[in-house]
Image (tube, rainbow, N blue to C red):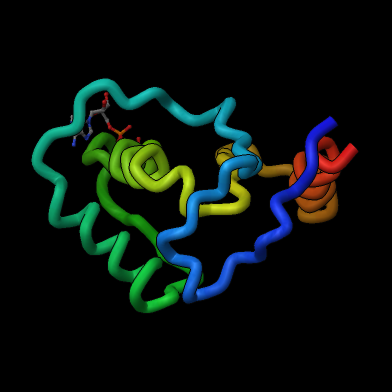
Length: 111
Ligand SMILES: Nc1ncnc2c1ncn2[C@@H]1O[C@H](COP(=O)(O)OP(=O)(O)OP(=O)(O)O)[C@@H](O)[C@H]1O
Ligand SMILES: [Mg+2]
């Protein structure tokens, strides 16, 4: 039986460590090599942790490294989030089905 961490995410909790955080990263690629894009990584960290940005689009031509950058960010900051779910919208389900999937991940953790 698992339980959700009691502590809720707040701006002041930026350096908190979520020991029992929920992570659904089954569909995420494994990053073995990561070159050059440290300034982009810093930008994402700054937008999320300092500027409280809620939505970020990472855009660019195919193969330029968007997925790698985002997964590297996730790997580097796993314990700063209470909940992480990696989803591909390449072949999207309807919104109700997608929401159902997301909620199920949360519910499984509190059973
Ligand atoms: N910073 C990086 N260091 C090392 N390898 C990288 C880096 N960025 C990308 N790659 C490699 O380049 C390839 C393409 O990267 P990635 O899948 O992240 O691109 P993408 O922009 O998400 O592509 P797509 O638009 O097709 O989804 C992968 O094999 C990845 O390992
Ligand atoms: Mg990609």
